[in-house]
Amino acid sequence: MKRPAWKKRDRPLLLSLPLFCKTVFAMRIDNDPKLDFDDVLIRPKRSEAPTRSSVDLHRRYRFLNSEQTWAGIPLVASNMDSIGTMQMARSLGPEMMTCLHKYHSADDLIAFFSDETARGHAFLTVGIKDQDLEKLRRVASRTKLSFLCVDAANGYTKFFVDRVKAMRETHPDVTIMAGNVATPEMVQELLISGAADIVKVGIGPGSVCTTRIMTGVGYPQLSAIIECADAAHGLRGHVCADGGCRTPGDIVKAFAANADFVMLGGLLAGHDECGGQWVDPENRQAGMRFYGMSSRTAVEKYAGGVRDYRACEGKEIVVDYKGPVRETLREITGGIRSACAYVGAASLKDLSKCTTFVLCQRTHNTVFGV
Image (cartoon, rainbow, N blue to C red):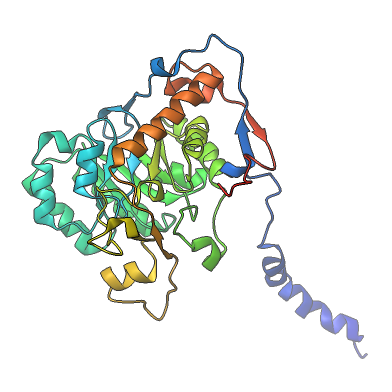
């Protein structure tokens, strides 16, 4: 008896069903609102408010795996090559931190970290290539290190976690900051499996980063900080908000969202302490070239050019000359103090406890383009 056509198709359809389901249902949409700095304001509160001058901006931390302690104002200069300079570290220290960029020579790093004061407020930054590990080994063999930043654009790979873990095993007493990531499960992975102390949070929010444009990948920075800080603090770890801060108010929002440290790049560009190339070396008023570390400029400078398999994920701009960095830092810390006074926080530590974020469609008046 001839089998009906529909019965003949039963078996092939059933065999293909798992593949069909995998194709259709692999993608998902997270409908929960995710917020950036522009989406919120902080609601002022009636309180026994302190004066701005009495607000304490110092924090004291004990780190999860190194068990070291650190005290100071938790602002960190970025490890971009024009920002993370030794001159910047000397200007920000000892109260604030600097991540030295990873292109300093081993000899220069040895000389810098031989100064005991410098060790207390500067991170040695390395990547995850074999030559980075060799540089770390050479520097560590000649001087004592307190802080290490393991830096990669994509902190989600097993290789990255394994490299962080390997550095922990060889440097058990060093405070390790690792990143970048933007979601809580990877924060937990780096703190537990990687044995990091601080996780750097931010995928694509930087002023000269084009990762979100080139790849479509990222996470709104305010929500990333809130969610990642919650995950880290449950394990007694810490997070550093990296990228997206264009104004002192954005820095305030990052701390209010429970960031332990806030890293600054573009806000510190254009100062005397920067290592960037000036448009006119004889006249700094012409501005400074400032570029992302995945830009064509950086890739050609440090990696011998753009490979066939990758795209550039950064851009180059010119920033105005701003003079000594101390004046900008005074503006930033002044804004933080004022914010604490508005919500009744006697210290930076209390800011997140006193914060209520208000959703909004416009945070400030832009009639004059600011």
